[in-house]
Image (cartoon, rainbow, N blue to C red; front, side, top):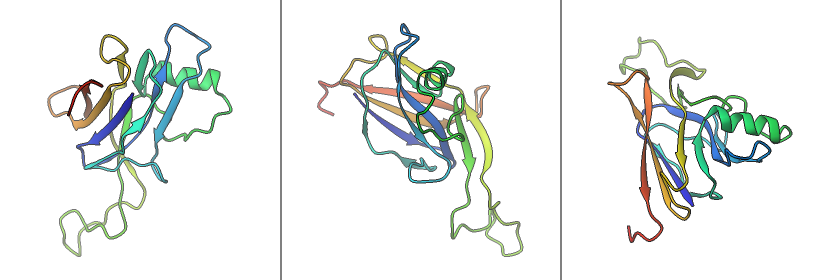
Length: 164
C-alpha cells in the first residue's frame, strides 16, 4: 500500500503515522514521522512523496493506540518527541527570508521559534472497510472553519486496480 499527504494549510504538520494490528497487543507497528525541524517535514501548502507502507489492519495518523503500541512494544526505537503526539499538530514556522505578516518594515517580525497554531484529531482507517491492501491512500490536511477542531483530515482512496 502507498500513502500520500497533501497539506492544504499554511502551517507545518507534525505527527506520527503508521500501521498496526489492533487484535495483537504485542504487535510492533511500522511507523513514520513528520517532524518539526529536520529532514522529514511536511510544510504548509506542500505534499509529501508517495511512501510505500506495509499493509496493516489499521492505518493511523496519531492515534492513542498507535502511540501506545510504539511506546510499549518498541521502547528503544528512535522517535521524535515533538511528533509523538496524539493527533496532528500544526505550527507556524518562520523560514529564512520570510517577510513580516503585513509586509511593513516596522511591523512585528515572525517569531523565530515555531508557534503551535492548533491540532487535528487523530485519524484511523480500517483494512477491508476503508481500504484494501495495494491501494493508494491520500490524506488531505485542511483548516476546519466549521468543525469543533482547528484542523481536520480528509481521506481519499485510489484502489490498486485504478488507472488514475
